[in-house]
Image 1 (cartoon, rainbow, N blue to C red):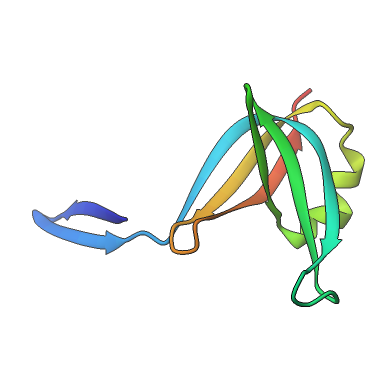
Image 2 (image 1 turned 60 degrees about the vertical axis):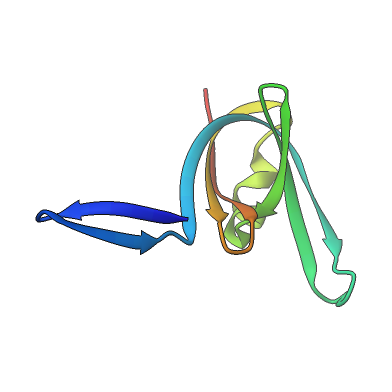
Length: 99
């Protein structure tokens, strides 16, 4: 994925590797499980709803202990995601309950 920029009448192409976007979602919960290849490594995923679509993605480690336990299930939230184009992966970077 390339981004076309026009700076001082010069066209510059930049390769985009990580895209950040925002969405309003309904928080369902999170779960942690050991890795298949390395059972000592723990992977945590979060479940969110965006309309009728379900989103299941990895979570920024700082959110697991500090933020996620305090959010009740089915709470509407503002979410910040990072999409890594190179690895085709989605990661939840920030989540804030909407009151």
